[in-house]
Image (cartoon, rainbow, N blue to C red; front, top):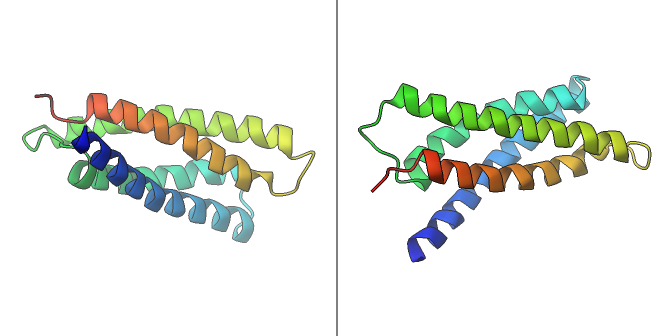
Amino acid sequence: MRKLLEQIIKFGMVGFLCFFIDYGIMVALTELCGIDSTVSSGISFSVSVVVNYILSITVVFDADKEANKAKQFFVFLILSIIGLGINTLIMWAGTGILDQYMSRSYMLVKIFATAVVMVYNFITRKIFIEKKK
């Protein structure tokens, strides 16, 4: 139980770092480059996936060091693409609803989308990335 708690804390720390990377790139692309927030969210999410993969297999999960790295990244990528789909769906629906009530609603929606995807990521990565004993 202690190991799981430590792992959740590490996952949270990595998640927050990747969230700031994701969020910062999204806001910069939207506000400075004029890219649609749904598109910029997809781009920023993708960048954060690479950072998250590296940190997840080196810091968070007890990944199999002997595993085929290409296969391991492919599984991580597939899980992340599903997460991206969840993220994009929440961004699209959330901004569609909230845009009529507030400007820049995408910033608030992104926080909610990140929380949902973070839970999904922990569970799926624990199942598919961590070394089986």
